[in-house]
Length: 221
Length: 321
Image (cartoon, rainbow over all chains, first blue to last red; front, top):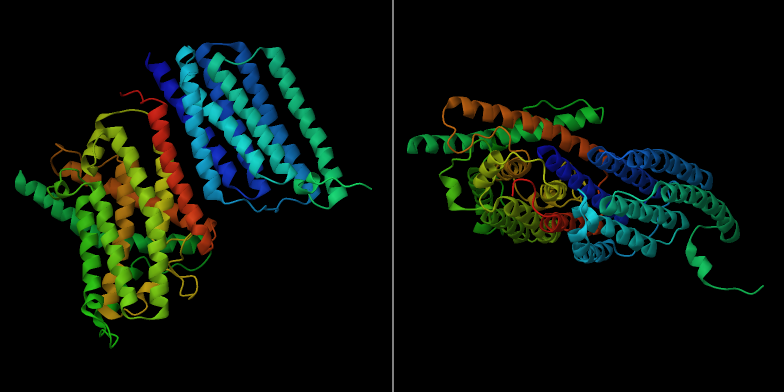
């Protein structure tokens, strides 16, 4: 009894860390910092998944934790680092629209997510049911990040962070998805990052910048 | 019994007044080491104070009584604050006079007096510094209040000593809201004590300074008192932080005898040494923000504190509830 209480507490702590990192991502200007934060998010996800797996004694969850460690903590940040190095975009900082306002919108989103998750967490029986609200908030915050950013790379990082939130929601609501689906999603993510990496080069060749602003106007030639 | 707690109170205040310049000196020394400079001696702040007390004070011709009395008011409020904050013991007769919200009021009083005194002479730098100080202050205060509300919610009291007592009786794992509150508090501490992301305490570079700009017209014993008060303010903030987030070792209510006090003093010294290293590290690693970024910085602090409140209310109370 005491063990599971301690565990639940620890999981709440990790979930709060996840939320904290989401807000940090919203407020960072430098692309490189964002990638580091993304790696940290993956690390927290790995820790919380392993804890849940240990508590519930599910082998499947161990696999998905290992997958998280390999993919989200090591592979994807490494690929993204390589990409921005090749693009020469390490020190890029983008002008953001008014960070305090973005943060306040984020706060409203968190309240909304918590409200939304309350009935769901009433029904769930997992040890992590209290953290569903945080998982939803992480998804919405990543979404907000994608909306407010203008560079292609940061939008991709936002997309990946959103997937992190979804994964966390899945573990906290139902002890994760079936293994096949999880493997599929992992592969999808990897491929998506590769394809988007190619896109980055194409976009830069066309417009001399990674600003997606240029993609909004149609031109006839 | 009564005399013992009075004695405890007195020793705490004397310790705070005595040790505060040492803490500032320790931070300066750590910073110097981290930046590969030869460190000034640890007792440098005391030497500066002695030198200043031996000088003759020069006053501007149009200085009003307000300007002359402000150093004493500043020093007095900071000593009073040190008497309220449980830095080594929680059984303080004085602490019943005011809770943590009144404590913030005390800090605000000091700020208002310093700003008015800076404007009193009518120099451009003084007014500029005062305005900036007020801008930082009005943004930092709500953040600090929110941090305190986190602790109040956790233990159901607004008095700092009973918070520490409450912490000692609940042996629970760290509550998630505490992390948010601690980070927010650290940000507020740096901003309120004119430390690096907001202001540089070592600078006399005219256009960027905030705190120093307000002190330009002070000299001799007045300057010494103001400097001493600002080191006390830093010490007080550090002690609030310890009381809220790292209350181990503080002699709690009912723990009588010299042993508990000795442990408390040793714990305080250890925490101050570590805090000094931490502060020096933060200050060496970060760059000073542009002044117009300061509202953004403090908005983040406020937001973190509010998030802590939300996490506490919506994640449900922790194991001890």
